[in-house]
Image (cartoon, rainbow, N blue to C red; front, side, top):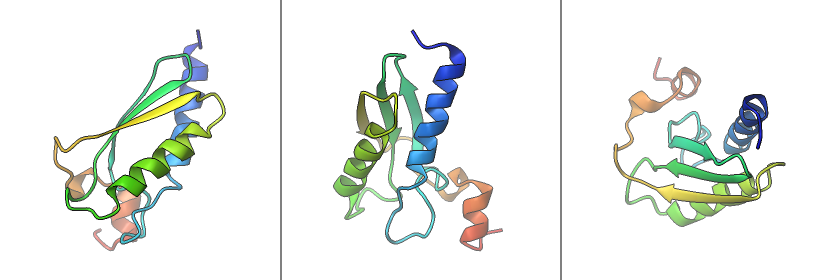
Length: 107
């Protein structure tokens, strides 16, 4: 079983991987956009991500979910990654990081 330090290191590596995923219409990564609601690691390398999209009508929903699975699945220490696409709570701009708001001229 991984200790809390190892678990935190893995979570940080997962976040780094998520920050390489972008919605092609928005020049900000999905993590800073606030699209990632939860990152759960069972301690055995099985990771589940709960995420949303800016709109249920997003035309790249499947591709973005697949990209998250692949990139997180390639993080050392991750054996398997599953992604749950959720719509509740609905995404809104208040979920964005300050860095994302700055990048998009919202601050």
